[in-house]
Amino acid sequence: MSICAIFFIAISKILNIYMWIVIISALISWVNPDPYNPIVRFLHAVTYPVLNPIRRIIGYKLGPIDISPMVVILAILFVKYFLNRIMIIVCL
Image (cartoon, rainbow, N blue to C red; front, top):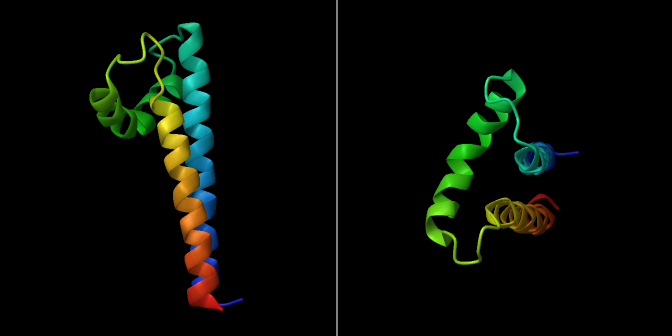
């Protein structure tokens, strides 16, 4: 396996982990968590810089439902698909 393939696989794994962090953060937001819990603070600190600009752009045009996590997940899936295609072209 080439270094190129290892690099793209590592980026794909990092994107997978971040996607799960966004999913967990969205699920936890449904249950009014304790804001001083270290896990909640970590999830908020990691996801807030990505979700907040999307929230500002979309706003509440769709009502009280926050779809910014879905937008981020779709963007991650698109980037992973795009990276897989690049890896096939470049590394092989």
